[in-house]
Image 1 (cartoon, rainbow, N blue to C red):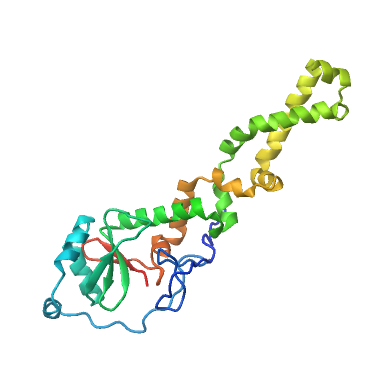
Image 2: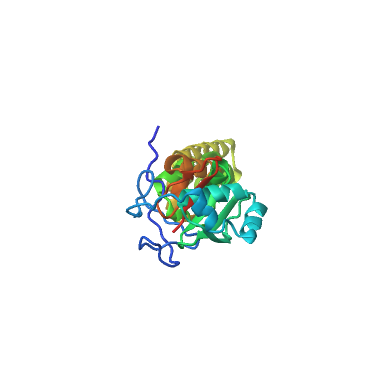
Length: 269
C-alpha cells in the first residue's frame, strides 16, 4: 500500500500576523507540507498554575460568557477547567464565521490568546473534518496532488464519459475505415463488420482510459475537473488520520490538549 504522507502543501492566506510572526488565514489556520504536525514557535516557559484561591479572587467567569458557551453546547465547568489549565481568564467569546459545530466554542483570554474548546474529541474531529472537506471542494490545489489523486473515483468517471467516448469512437471508425480493416461500403451501410469494429474500438479505448483516467483529463486540458471525481469524504478522513485533527485546527502549534472532563482545546494564535 502506498504510504500517504505530505498531505497538505504549504499554505497561508493573509489575515493579520500570528504571535509567532507567521501569517494566518481567515480561519486563523496555517498549513505546511511535511509528515505529521507542523512546527511552530512556542513560549519558552509556562507560568505557574494559579491556585484555587487565586482563581476565585480573579472573579471567575462572566455571566454573558457562561450563557453563550452553554448555548453552544459547552458547560461552564469545562471553561473553568480550561482557565485553570492555561492559568488565564476568558475575556470574550467569538464565532467562527465559516464553521459552526455545536459543542465547540471559541474564546479569547485576558492575555490575548485565542483558543477553540470542544466538549469532547469527537467534536474536534468533526470540525477538523468539515474544514478539510471545505478546502478540498473549494481549493483542491492546496493539497498534495499525488495524494489527492489516490481518491479518484474511476468507476464514476467512466460511467459519465462512456457515452461521449462512444460517439468519438464511432466517428473514428467512420472517418478512417481502412485503419479498422473496413471498406467505405461498410461505413455507408453500417454493416455488421462496421458495428463490430466500432464496439471493439470503444472497448479498447475505455480500457485505455481506465488505466489512466487522470491523464486522460489532463490530455484534454480539463484537469480542473479532477476534483469532481474525488471521494471527498474518504480523502478528508485520510487527511485527518495522517496529520491528526490538531494539524488543521491549531495554527499555533498543531496540538490538541486534554482537559480532565474529556473536553479538548487548541490554541489558534
